[in-house]
Amino acid sequence: IRMVIMGPPGAGKGTQAPKIKERFSCCHLATGDMLRSQVAQKTPLGKEAKKIMDAGGLVSDDIVIGMIKSELENNKECKGGFILDGFPRTVAQAEALDKMLAEKQQKLQHAVELQIDDALLVARITGRLVHPASGRSYHSTFNPPKKHMTDDITGEPLIQRSDDNADALKKRLVTYHAQTAPVVNYYQKTGIWKGVDASQEPGQVWKSLLNIFDAKP
Ligand code: AP5
Ligand code: ZN
Image 1: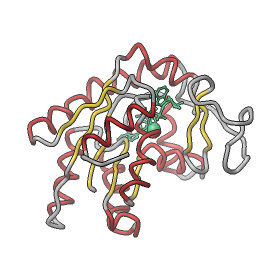
Image 2: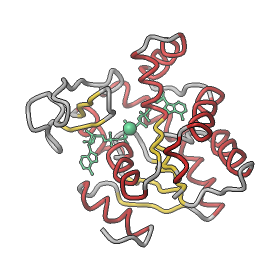
Image 3: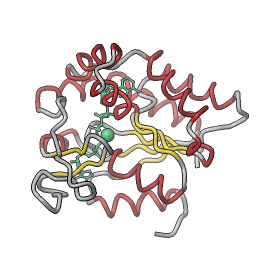
């Protein structure tokens, strides 16, 4: 499978994408996770990116395009296809992706938009808990870990993302509507766009996604 999953902050991209990865044996590339790993390693890029991310802005197209290109070329898991989560976020990124794929005689097959009202996102974002090493996320109310503030699989502590507060969320939403919503139009024009109601509970969202691919649960 070759697809992108889109949607505003908290729509559920990072919740659904690992399930796609497992179901279709493809790689899951999340530019936000890649950038957070740079931040954690305190690389020069990470230090620059942290300021932008905490302010709800976008890291430069060149940087994220380079990251995706390198993964698609070198990550063996991507041989079976890919799901991109958080990329493309600008029309320039979408064009760069098409170009990258065309060089390999490939085309994107699906661009799925997780559709949800902004008003529902505050509760999702402010309650999110993440396991930094794996990118696994939980929710204090909607999807609590088995043990308080602890990752179910490794037993390691869960943290809150530094951009997961109501203030930064407002800015992330402004950025989404201004810069990323046009990417939805871009894919509507090419005919590969599909929308899914992301306000449903996670299991139902997953079923709606499978319907798009005509796959059985
Ligand atoms: P990124 O990490 O991509 O953040 P985002 O787009 O803001 O999306 P989130 O990760 O917040 O939401 P999600 O949709 O994954 O939700 P999740 O499944 O976790 O990017 C971060 C930053 O990096 C950007 O702001 C930017 O600065 C930079 N960046 C990244 N990519 C870039 C690019 N391409 N170009 C430039 N800059 C880039 O769910 C959220 C919560 O809700 C969880 O707690 C979850 O348990 C819960 N939940 C999920 N689904 C449901 C449901 N159906 N019902 C109830 N609760 C649910
Ligand atoms: Zn995410």
